[in-house]
Each structure stands twice: as C-alpha cells, then as structure tokens.
Image 1 (spheres, rainbow, N blue to C red):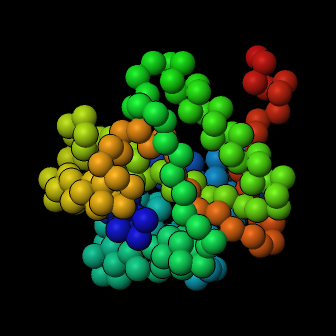
Image 2 (tube, one colour):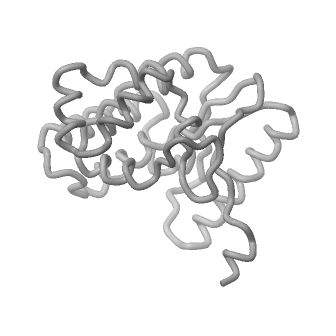
Amino acid sequence: MFRNAKLRLTMPEAYEVHRSIIDWGKTHSPDKVPDQALGVDNGTLALMKWAMASWQRVHTMNTLMGTWAPRLQMDLVPGMACAAHFVIRAQSAPASIDDYVAAGRATQRFWLTLTALGLHMQPEMTPLIFGRYVRNAVRFTRLEPLQEAARKLYGQLTSVIGNDPATAVFMGRLGAGKAPTARSLRKPLAELMK
C-alpha cells in the first residue's frame, strides 16, 4: 500500500480525481471524502489542501518534500497497526455484470459481518486497480516511469496474493478500535430517486 500510494500521489491523472472528491473542512460528506477522514495530521492536511489548488503545486511539493508524510500516515502506519489485511477472491475472474454484482454482494456481506462484530474496515483498492490496468495493458498515465512502476507493483501484488490476481475483487485492512468520527455518507434516498 505504501508503494502504491507513491504511484497514486505522483500521478497527474489521480490528482484530478483527488481534487474532485475531497470535501475540505468537513467531517461528513454525502458524496465525497471529507478531509477529516483522510487520516493525516493537521499539518499534513494543511499542506495537502494548499498543494491541491493546482497540479504544479502538487508536483513541486512532491519534488521538494516527497510523499512520505501522507504515505506514512494514510498507508504504512495504519497498515502495520491493523489486525489483518484481507483479499476477497472470486472462483474465477469476474467477466459479466452478474459476476461483479456477486462480488459486491460478497463484499457487502463481509463488511456487514465485520460491523456486527464491532470491527472496522478500510478498503485497499489501489493495488487491484493498478493491477487491472497492467493486466489489460491500459495506459492510465502519460508518465512512462509511473507505467513501469505499476508493472513492478503488479509483480509484488502477485507475490503477495498469488498467481491469479484477476480473481481478487476486493482488498482491505481490518481491526478493532474507536468508531471513526469522520466518514463519507450516502446521498439521501430522495435525491437518488430523482
């Protein structure tokens, strides 16, 4: 996750996504990620908010300071402090809409069971996302060094979860602890029914 985070944080295409989904100054958001749920300290959060005003700022900050602070706080420390990392796998790589619905159903059942047991879960999807791009030869960034980094990370993913990463449909970490005070929420049903 720490290595995947470097790829995620240095890719201009991911910057555009992050810029559009972070809800600054919020603990709860119906359709974005509240900044208070990112899992970084106030100093790192302030730097992130300043840098996210433009890709040039992000690139300059990454060049001068690196990506250590957010990767340590969002990925490495929580990953080492959690109770376990897990992978939910299908019997074969999903191919149809029904396969993906079944994967979602299994993931939701797992998540609800964890919640019923008083545990918490954090998705760890970037290895699967970048892995799928590599497997399908999708050019996901204009920066060739990042394409190469993704290929190396895919090899590492295979060594960790086995020879057929295409069957992995969800990854995450889990553990016990206090309930989060900040989180993404669902849009109200009335708004979804429009």
